[in-house]
Image (cartoon, rainbow, N blue to C red; front, side, top):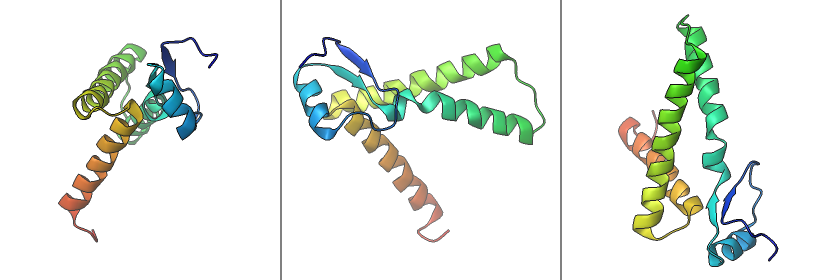
Length: 112
């Protein structure tokens, strides 16, 4: 393995194969998966949509503060699951995401 980094942040969608994931994890490399690393752009797009729909204006500082709060919370939620269940960050993100979808389906019913 030629990667010497101790932390890898995926900047593309699905850049690491499952085989490579196993190698990185086996070598103690902490991988912040694409799902989490790319969430900031999607989040800010949502802010922009809400701002336009509600005819609001948010300053760059306000957007950055909101984004930072959300991204820190998301990271901590995934990290906590990874540590408590002893799984990779990728598996923890899937656990969290699938759990949220399942809860939404439960609350809305199977056929909303």
